[in-house]
Image (cartoon, rainbow, N blue to C red; front, side):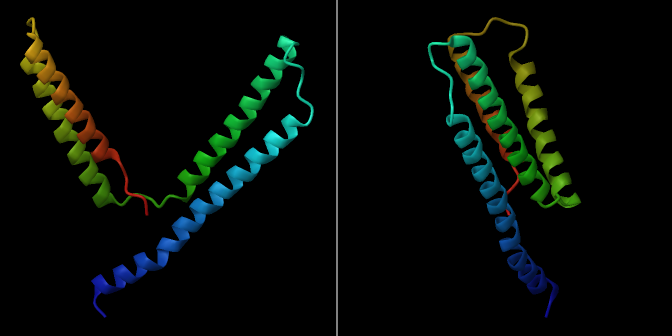
Length: 141
């Protein structure tokens, strides 16, 4: 069996583990969120008592934000590490986009732009932002 077949088999074998970890994180977050909502909705304060209602809603939102942070940390902890080859490829892509962004800034710097030039500049900036995000986006495994 050659190396490429072995690599493909390993990737296929690891695929369910990544999705299981994702599902585990999602399940834990959903259950914690449901529990918090259930606990807070048992005895909510009257909406006419603004101070008590404000404190109650702030506590509810803080508890839900904590669950959200834990969910993000769980997903981040279960994400496979980026390989050095992927990191260098990403860095090269980001550097190319930054270089083109500097060229764009230099092209329009120091003068009053016409409406058409402003439109063209905004369109090119948007394209560069999209390319930058595409470079820095990791594929889900």
